Image 1 (cartoon, rainbow, N blue to C red):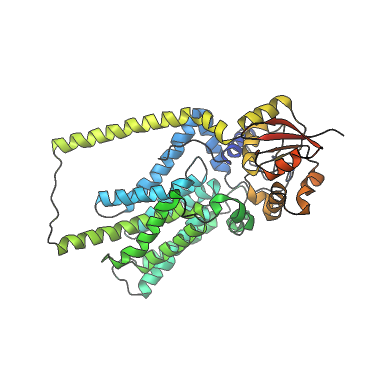
Image 2 (cartoon, rainbow, N blue to C red; image 1 turned 180 degrees about the vertical axis):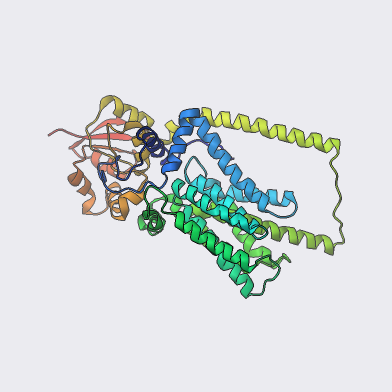
Length: 465
C-alpha cells in the first residue's frame, strides 16, 4: 500500500534543495528559486529531510525513494499495531482500517517522517507508564524532529495532551492506570527539555513560531487541498468516516470505559482530522489502539455472555507451513509491487506533470519571466532552475496569503485586478493547464501567441512590440 509513485508537487523542489545543500554545505535562509520572492527570508524547516531525500535519490534513484518512504509508513503502522492490546487479528484489522484512512496523505514527502516520529513518540509515552525513564529519549527525538520537519510541534502537543489527560484521570478518580506523581513530573520535565532543544536548528528561535504561522494561514486552508476538510462524498475518505463513527458508537456497546486522557486525545485529533486532511494520519495513530481495546472488550463480553470459551491453539506443522507460505507470498507481492511502481515513475511523471512542456521550454527558451501554475513550481525548480526562476511554487508560507489571493485572482480572472501581475512583474511567458481561465483569455488577446500546447499544458508568449 505504501509503495507509490512520486507525484507530490513539492517533491521536486525538495530534491533540488537537498542537492544544493549537499553541494554547498549550507542551508538556505533566503529564497533562491522565485523572481517574486527572491532574496526574501525563508525558513526551510525541512532541510534535513531534503538532504535525506536527495541522498536516497542519488544512491538508489526513484526506487530507493519509493522503498524508503514506503518502509517509513509501514514502520509507523507496525508500531501502532504493537501498541494495540489483545488478539492480533483484532489489532490487525483495525490497523489496516487506519492505514486505509490515512493513505490519501502518503507519499515521498517529509510529512511521512513526522508520521513515523509521532508513532515512535506515542509508543514512548504509553510505555513510560511502566518505565518512566523512557521519557528521557524524547529530547533527542525532538532534536532530530525539529530539523526534519516543523511537525515537531505535534510531538510537543501530544506530550502536553498526555500530561493534561493524566491530570484529568486523577481528577475524575480513574485509579486503574499506573499514573504516579513521579511519572507526572518526569513528563513535565521532558516537555520542558523538548522545548529547550527546539532552537537547536539552523533557524534558531524562529522555529518556535513557524508552525503556528502555518496553521493560521487562511490561504493554505483555502487553496491547498490537503489543508481542507475531508469530503466524505469521496470514497477515499470512507475509512476515516468509519473510524469516526466507530469511536462514537463503540463506547455504547463496549464494557471498556474510556479514560479522560483517551477522550481528550480522541477529541482533539478527531477535530484536527475533520478540519484538515493532512491530520487524518495523526488521528489514526491515536484512534487505532483505542478502537482495538474497545472491540476486544466487547468481543470478550459476548463470549462470556454466550458461555463460549477461548480455544487454546498451538502451532502445528501445518499452521507453520501455511504461515510461511503467506509470508513468502507477501514478500513476492512486495517485490513485484515495488518493481511495478518504480518502472511506472516516468509514465506517471508524464501523466501528472507538464513534462513535454518543460522539454519544449528547455529547447526553445521562451522569454522570462514565466507565470506558472502553483502545482508546477516545484517541478520547474527541479527541471529549469537556475536558468528560469518560478513565479510561485508549493512554499505557500513563503508567498503569504495576499500573494496567493493575487495568483487566484489572476488565474480565475476575478475582477479588474487580474492583470496586475503582468504589470508588476513584466510577465512575458505563461505556462498553465489548457482549461485555465487565464489561458482562454490570453489566447483571445492579440498580444499573446501560442508557442506550445498539449493536453497537459499550454505555453503562451507575449508578442514582441
